[in-house]
Length: 404
Image (cartoon, rainbow, N blue to C red; front, side, top):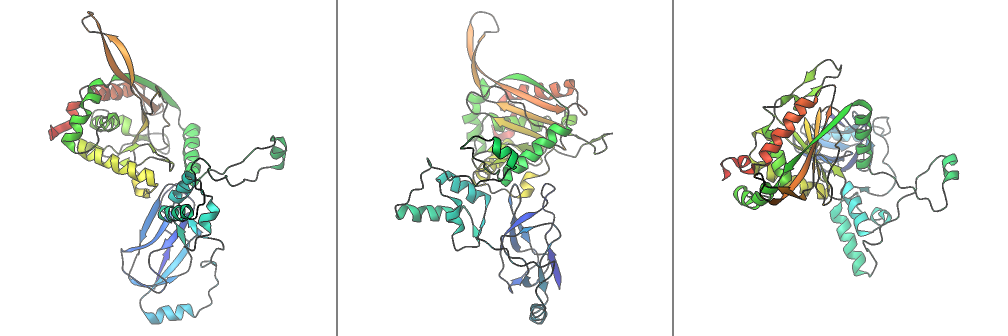
């Protein structure tokens, strides 16, 4: 008989939500096959069975489970399973099922808010787990029955309790709204960064006129979208060999640096389901086309809120995208465990004198900034990285490799 306990899925969370079992109670399980789904603060993760056997479920879907908690047992045969079921069920390791409705996944919550459907309507569904698909089906049924799901009327946030002293000071009409698990994770990371990392910041202007013009040609050559973000990732990956210190981290005791092989670039995506920073692993060994396709996959996952934890771990540098029109400058957060984070702002149109002084020309410039851990890096090292990326962005065809 093999015990199955909740594994440590990531280093950020003390517990995870058990969304659902992928094998029914008593069902046959094969080692390595998907066994259950759990939701962390950032992702939905599918976990595999550790061994062959017949499944004895001990914890139902919907529970918050800490790493190490006993979730199930895998029995070698039916006799072992039957014997286990005849034993008393109550124990500290096998708690009773939690009361209440189904589990709401993060994408489902985001979709409910987008459609203006109260969470109570989803919690009334007769399913163990409510995903985005169930929300869309619910919206279709409500629309067919003539009930409003207008996006202009979002669901009211659930009230929060606060200290009586504070509540007395709040004016009438004050509304408290809970942070999502995703936003709580973001808050913890940003707080840790500001508490632990003494940052400095510098920025350069980059002329992306040629990069914007070359985007369509490069996209056709590599078979995927190519814009300033994709080109910046490719340029940053190229600089890994020249500016390795910017890809290092301070050791835990603060007395040295830790530099892992490769450029593992985290890129921020915020498309309505929360802020995510998926990682482009080994970007320095990837072509522009491979990076572009990977980033498109991350965009789609960000829309659905469907990242796996392994998609979000292992970055040794981060690029934060602030490319909404009108954003001219942004200071990125240096994630704990990294030494440097770059920010890419939106292009802005400027009029500059011609190099020969005979006239003027219209160009598109962006601010490319870098925040860095000043315990680890000095300005000269960061300027080397920024100017190196700038040079590549201003000669974008260099990043196409053999595609052109």
